[in-house]
Length: 302
Image (cartoon, rainbow, N blue to C red):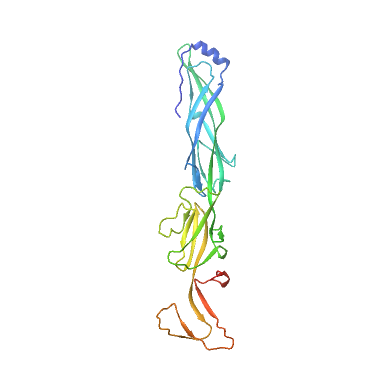
């Protein structure tokens, strides 16, 4: 910071008298704003946020008559704290990385800056020599605080299934019957703190049905017109949650008795069996799903 100089007209002897009586300032005006990148300071878990002081102004009012005062970096110190002292550091700038700086996890936080400095008063004596007095100390002086938010993926949900883990299992699996061409199902991500996604998040492991990126959307539509199993995850920084989507089709139907005959329609999806009459009149037909799924997990109307 360049020294600041204020000049006035005065008599040297008058200054010496006044200065010897009251060498201290009456009021220090030292201001700065706290800037951040990104701004607003909303970031994903595991990401960094940079803070620094800008537009710094220093002034002293109520000094005795003098020719100038100087204030410079050599006598200036800064410090900052997060959440009232959970994390502390030095300097007029700070880089906070969630998960690495003490208690800075997902949630709403606050960073505050303070500074202390020294200044010199100068005048010209009767022999026309420049004289200085100081340094006089100022501090610790508060520059205020700035809030910031660290966001993580709290969960992903589909139908009545909710997952809070990045390694889903059976409890985080959605089973859905295969649909017509173009059919979809919606998967939604929730953040913590709620409704506080940074711009462009969450990121999804799947695209929209039209092939476009789903990043920045809180929900994505996954296609259900093709049988198979897939894992769909949402992420924000190093946090993520995932859900397994199983789209099920009936791969085959087989009666427990009878003999298949050619029905002549050349349609592989229709088969004809001749079943002998039985006293019970009961024929059991077994369905084979694709992909494989436990019977207990089948949908009620499947």
